[in-house]
Length: 132
Image (cartoon, rainbow, N blue to C red):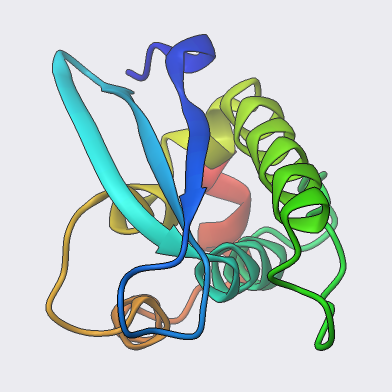
């Protein structure tokens, strides 16, 4: 089980030589701590995957995408706050925070998050019902 209220998103920063913002996600999964760095697009991929694989169930929203001005400090800080709210709300839903999708999100990988999530088996309607 996950100690849900400990999960957070902090420390938005632009890695040297890159053109995107990275957020630090940390928390406790079972008895193990995790700390992973994720881009906004990773949160979007996670949310899309959860919505697809848990149809009809509540999945917290994330802030909308913004192409221009997405590295301005005020915007980055606000987005970090909203992504933190997303993780905290997700953590209050055991069916989401204990899901394979979330476990993949918090584990380091050499592949893209989208690729990792695409490798999960297809969910039949019966299996979707058994998950909750």
